[in-house]
Image (tube, rainbow, N blue to C red):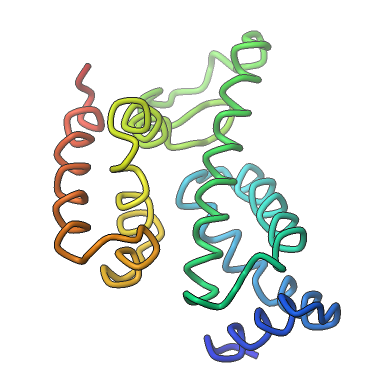
Length: 183
C-alpha cells in the first residue's frame, strides 16, 4: 500500500465506518505524518508527539471527511493545526518551567527552541500573522510548509486561484521581515 489512490480509498472506507480500513490508514499514514510534523517541529520527539495528536484526530474525526476534496488535503489541515497547537503547548510549558532550559546550549533562539527544537521564528511569525492577518495564514501554511499544489490550496481555502496567489504573496511579504529577525 503506497500510492495515493490506495490512501484515498482507505480514507473513504474509514469515513464510512470500516474499522479495519481506519486501522490500516493510521498505520500507513504514521511515517508521513511524522515527517510533515517535522516541518513545524524539527525536534524528533516533538514531531512524534504532534503526529500522535494528528493520528488521534484522524481517528476521532474521520467520519467528517466527506470526500469532496482529497484526503491528503484534509489531513494536512489536521497536521498544521496539531503541530501549531503542540508548539503553543511547548511555549506555554517553557514559560511555566523556565528553569528546565539548559543554558549551556549554543543555539540561535530565533530559529530553534532549546526546549522543543521548534522553528521558533517560523511559528512565532505564523502566530503574529494569525493575529494581524488571519486570512493569510492558511495559504502560507498549506503552500509553503505542507507544500500542496496551488490548485489544491485554493480549493482547500475556498478561493479562486488568483486570490490565493495574491494572499500567498501578501503573506510572504508580511512574514519575510519577521523571519529575518525584524521586530
